Image (cartoon, rainbow, N blue to C red; front, side, top):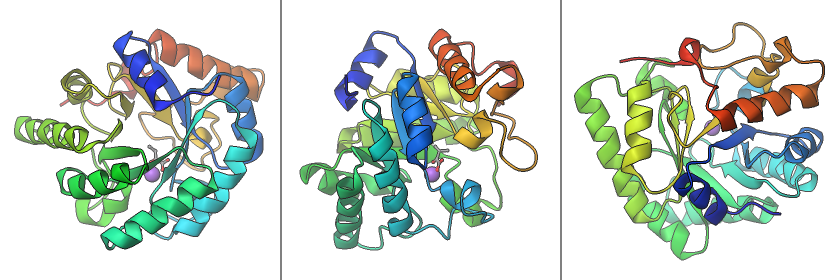
Length: 264
Ligand code: KIV
Ligand code: NA
C-alpha cells in the first residue's frame, strides 16, 4: 500500500520507527521499495555521490527533477521526497514554481533546508498543496557559512534555539523534519517536542526514524564513511540482504549504535 505522510505520522504516534534512504535511480528505488522502505529522498547529495562534486551547491532543480522521475518510475509504495537544491528559493514565486517542477516529476513532498525563516515559505507551499519537510542541523547547502561539515546544536542555548525553530516550522505547516548531525540528546528532544515525525541522520537513536545516503549504506562512497553511517554490505551477501538488514535495524532501534552517535 502506498505510504502517505498520514501513515508516517501514525507510525510516530504508535512508536514505530520510520526507515528511509536516499535514491537517485529507478533500479535502486525498486529494490528499496520491495524491501519495504517507508520513504525515499532524491537528495541533493546526488551532487556528490552521483555527479562527483565536492559539495551539494552545483545541483539545480532540473537535476533533482530528472532523478525524481527515475525514482518515481521504480517505486510503488514509498513516500517520495525531493530536495529543493541550493538557491532554488530566491523569491516566493520562484520557490513555488520550482516546487511544482519537483511535484510534477513525481515527488510527494519537497524538503527545504533552514529554520524559522522558512515559515512564510512553508505556509505558501502548503496552501498550494505542496507538502513540506524541513531539514535542520547540519544543512549541507550552508557548508560555507558553517566553515565545514560540523556537528550543530552542541551548546544548551543552540539546542533550545533549534527546538524553538522546529516548533515554529511545525506550526507553519511542515509535516516532517529531517535533522542532521546534532547530539543524540537534541535528536531525542526534538522528537519529543514535535508531533510531526523527526527523521535523523547522525542525530542519535531516539529520533522517530533514520535516513542514510544509499551509497554510505552500501559502502560505495569513495573515501572514509562519515561517523554516523554504517556499511551494511560488510556483513551482507547481497544488496537486497544489506537493505533488509538496514531496515530491520532501524525498526528495532539497533541502528544507530553508540559508535555512530554524537554526544554534546
Ligand atoms: O541530500 C541528502 O541526501 C539529504 C539527506 C542526507 C538527509 O539531504
Ligand atoms: Na539534501
